[in-house]
Length: 564
Image (cartoon, rainbow, N blue to C red; front, side, top):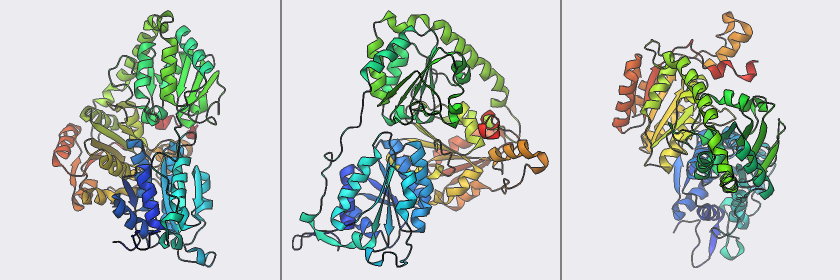
């Protein structure tokens, strides 16, 4: 029997094994980690509990993978890292999960209590550093409290909008053994309640009345639609009440491409002309122009899990706090049967928006079909969109190239779009691939990287090879950090546009081959589709290195508020 586990003679259990039992109770199936002496007893406990231990090459990858696992599965992810630099390396992943409202637990090591403030190896004030970017951060004070504190941290992940928690566990607390009878070990399903709030009934009725009488309504379905698994409720509302829907973040894919209520290219037009605008699960942050892109004459409704988000940065006419799925379902039920839910009078409005969509599409059609070399980024993302199947999870990791893809790539199913979220973190791609492919091995994973973004965490491509996790990867390679380059050119002139943003011409296809994956280079746009299909058929982790035009910028890059 392992040294740290309980046995019949002493009935003792170690802190690491208590942690593993708490992870098991929460339904955690895998931890992402980079080894360190402070944390190895957790590994020993995970082996006994049947929890997979996946080792990566950088702690940032471990944290991003835990975030990605939560997004794909709906269950909290978990990363375990050592003290000091192990924990600081994971800070970016935790911060990204915090802004993206993704529930995950980071467990960090710490020096022994007996060496507190003595300058022990890798000793840092982790809790102080993590407090501003987590919903809960604490030290486990005693071995008997280890499982209890893990469960407490998970409970806090779901207070309001989801988010990350952090626990540091001193080495002597983790390694010590205590009688099982003295340890609090919360039972699965019995230490936290449902957080699904259906919203204020009066506000539900008011929103139903607004939608019934609206002539030009529009709805934005944000990430919380997927977070709350409210897809069916959202679909039912827009179809029953005949409301045009726009999607962003993880809400992409709520409606499939081609659905009569699926709109993408006319959002600005709609938000400038609608009389009722419903914003679901999306804050008025930079992506929304801080609310200034909504018509000042429209009646604006905001639905969010977090009370603090509703009405922030822009006044609203109605705010509803709660679970997006339950609220949308209640609104549909309240509106149904009243004047046909207002649905019959919307045809002219939907046709108007469809015409705006067509105008926008025709404007960029030459670029989407361009045969130019270097390859136009619009042509690349158009080929990727055509390549996706119903089972393709799409991951975007980059700046300008992913901004292009956001206008073109349309996931065909709910929960099949992953991007960093509002923190704009580069480097999430490989960790998200790792999490998505492990959590859903039945799904194809397709990831588009900017060359700068891939460089940040690309060495964990080897982790994907090592764990035999095939995916189709594409690097949009312009040897530049182009989103920043554009801003510099605008601010300082063309003679200073290349300061601090130009990369080498790296052959990422050869990098993939070196690590045991599939790699191919593409310079002719006609070769993109065949190369993608060969990557799929290879059954390996892959990188298709596509040389794109460095002088083509996405409209979203050129319109960024930070450059205004």
